[in-house]
Length: 442
Image (tube, rainbow, N blue to C red; front, side, top):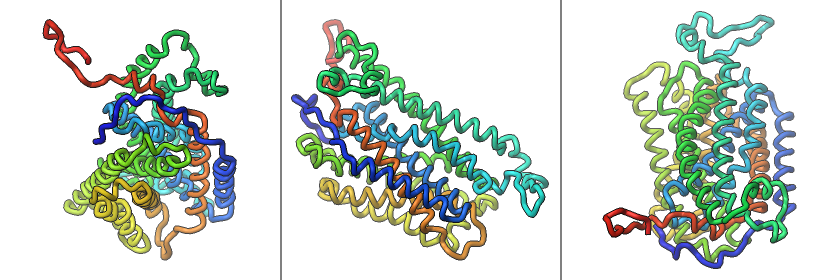
């Protein structure tokens, strides 16, 4: 990893410039997605809403988890880019608001394999007479599913917001004197009356604990979301690797989005002096490594089912590998694993921001298609044409517009570079031995 002079001196105060184009453009795209929703068939609309919610919410919470990883590992190489992944927290309130709309509105589309529904004037209960579904009846209960998932999101997103609060708290101190006012500053600055260095040290220590709990919550609760809104769309299917693959994909797509955002904003914010080829080289190595890890996790899930000829589990892959979804599976593997693996092998490529961003964009597109494949083949039966068109792309643009609007608000509101006070609160990691043999921090 890169070793820059640390902590840096004379850091400038950088904010993204107010951009009506970014905000209005994002909202226009969101409106376009809403219009698209009402122009396409209901099942296609709700399916597009479903997998796009999974993709964009995964990117947002995955970015926060990348910020958590940088904090817990004391990753000094990334000091200048650590606020970029933290910006994903701005989309989480939108994700939380859209969740009940998505789940209630499209429940009969996603869960028609087990949820009682009306057909030909009669109420059909798919569980009746199905031994497997009857055994799962306690879990496959829609009110219980919605309740536990809502609690899971409140806990997970709440911890993510609390982590961001303590990350940003020392950064906003004194910004009122620089003309920055508003509820974010009054909220973050509440109670700061003493030494700001002590406040920064306290926030750092608190986030050491919050980060651990958040990492555990991410693995468990985002895995629970994967099971409830992903795996239950094909209720006979079961895999202990499914939630693992789900949150690993979230983290990998978050790395890719962070790279794209850093490259986009580095020039406009004049950050070349602090975000150098060393940072790109290191985050490029992470993108490469998690491409390999993603393939390993998915292969681990597939090979057990294929080798064991597990009857119910095979259906999950048969639906994806056969027409019309087979070519998309090949495209996903190429975009997330094969092309990044060979393309990012050279050291020089990882140091070229625009080329690295190109690979990151390819990975993002691959993960979007992966989320499409996660549930779409489970929902639609006997398809002759690939259900990938206006509904799915329009909804992606709508969610992407909301994400861009939220993210640009974050960069306009909070300093893009961490404050010297925040950086000084990070322990050096060096120790020496005192006079009586006691190990103390240098």
